Length: 154
Image (cartoon, rainbow, N blue to C red):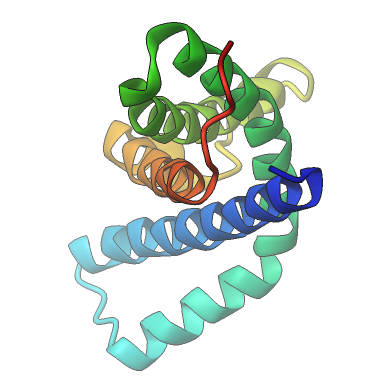
């Protein structure tokens, strides 16, 4: 497989992860508002998703890129050790774990380095919210595993 194709698939996967995680983030926040009685019509939801993709998306793209750049090679290495049937599961888990670790690391950074008690990504405050974000990363990992052919083993 050419390095260009691999990089293209990787960048597309980061883009998919960014979009899925951003949409999950918006949904979790809007659901929290709806839970306390706010009425959020579909047009407002779509507008919020669009604004979050434009505002949060570029930063999220960079942190997802960094997370996947660490997680995907590790998943590929483990898949080569365990065998081809583990590839799809490995990359899917790697994407989800990478996003969860990113969110936890951001919160820890704010707490330790900035002495702050806020959670910068509000949707990651609860386990359900964190898992929703991780599901977006898992979707991107699954996408990556579908497009990237396995490395040849010797």
